[in-house]
Length: 355
Image (cartoon, rainbow, N blue to C red; front, side, top):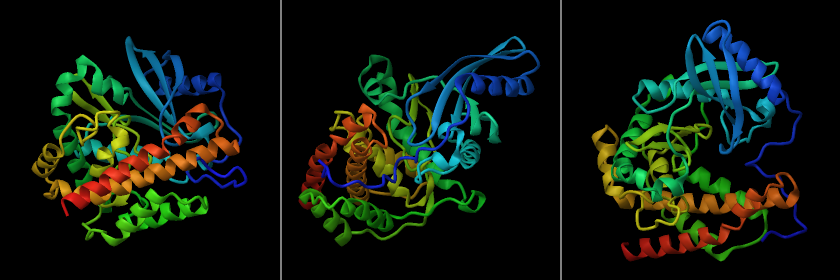
């Protein structure tokens, strides 16, 4: 628990700023767009905000026009104001551009239908097709209807990641660049600012500094490739969502983030997202053009991922305690710091055993 006397800025949460666009105004702006996109007389219905997304708003709605029904998604900056998004997130226009590049590379993503910049009611936003499927990790890992998907999902994720990582960096917009060591330094700095030493975090930081792997050529990294950001159907991977944390970095980061135990939702025996085995993912990754890797090549990055998530959980508690985000969700996630400490101990034991 954080000291009650310390109040820190929370880098993962947007500042409170004036919002634009009520629900009625958003619906009106979308209907005006729909009349241009789908034909005069098109109507918008069922507008509702969805949960999820590290820093952007996500809304579902339907458009009826020209005898067709279209299920769509609006991605929008918080309150429509780009300055209100998390400092970790890329902008909406850049996210839409990445989706277009990913689609051309054969990555399953929703088609982008419209991009808005400084719209009086929508602010910064884009509209994309709504893909059918499930994103909730516990349902994907538990429900019988996804039993077939679980058998093929690791390979499909390996294929999708190889395609993401193959997109030429020189064709992309100006993205942040972040490798493992500068991420470690950044998160250590955030952790140190709390002045609340946690022995397991200290041990993990020391180990990561002493065992940093040689760098690989940098690629486009999705940045949050895990259950919750993957739309899964009965056939497997239907779409890769939430590109707001994309950057240029090491390809092992994406693979390892999917392996972090917090994203296995209680199915810890399956290293890949609680549904698959890492050799299967790596085999598919190499078959789709990615560099060949062994499971132990992911160890350092998985430990970094668990440490990062533990520090994010500390930050989320501070957001709740300080009033920056008073939601119960932030308080609940903040309690998970201890879970990440257990994960880090298990990872440290594992690398020691096969060293």
